[in-house]
Image 1 (cartoon, helix red, strand yellow):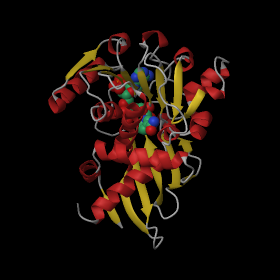
Image 2 (cartoon, protein in one colour):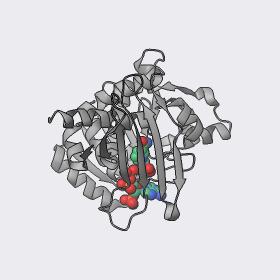
Image 3 (tube, protein in one colour):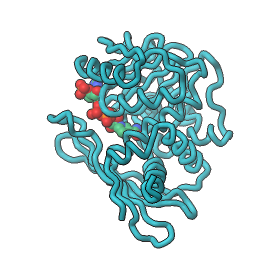
Image 4 (cartoon, protein in one colour):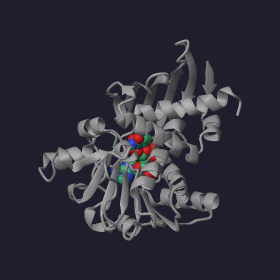
Length: 317
Ligand code: NDP
């Protein structure tokens, strides 16, 4: 069995490749080719969680499982929020073939999936990017968005301003793009064409009133029916897409809250991003409409990314 560590994963899986891999994976999911078990999340002490997921890409494709611990509050900032393993099995022999570190895969596949959705749903002239959150996902989302639009400026907001400043410095050094660490959500998002919400906030941080007509939002930070990053009005005022219809109806906190308050019903979920890719559902309808891609994260994204990495590692690229 090949072991693949985070550094090797970062070498083998660029955002550009990740976007292609996510495009194929999400189309397969929506075409009904993949199979997956319902995600299990075990709550632990101190707000931590342990997640267990399993799935297959379909006939002849890879299958496997992800075991991941999530630690939202950490005393040591060097510890990543997501740690674990993705295990792939050999479709020919049935033997375990590869064990890859889950944190790096999760970080790159999530940002790549958001970038793919942005490519599909955002206006083609989108240039101003706002990111709410300053952690691992914020960093990867900033870099992945550069692959799909000609980004002119990035505006960052974080609960801890010092962390926004640190991330801004890092992104400027790595990309040369203008990056502004903002002191308020409003400063970051007013006028933004693309907004990524990648916080561990419990209550909405992004009010509808701040979002400009025509914006695209990647709603990423809440992975289960609890924490919400956006308010009901923003859900209701958007054309709302999911990574997986089943997951978002069962565990998407923002949509479920808006349904519970009666402001929308289940039909507000227009479709899966894969359905748009397959041409079965229309994506953006109007230049001045707001689109939302709700990412809860999906095991087929992990399996597809790990299979891509494994294949490159196996042939020694
Ligand atoms: P990090 O822990 O690295 O960063 C979390 C960020 O959220 C930090 O900027 C932190 O601010 C901020 N934050 C924490 N609590 C609050 C709060 N109450 N209000 C506002 N901001 C807050 O996590 P990641 O970047 O790895 O992940 C970000 C979120 O995305 C998490 O909730 C995670 O579970 C989720 N996620 C979703 C995935 C998906 O597929 N949809 C995949 C992976 C992660 P501060 O600097 O002050 O601590």
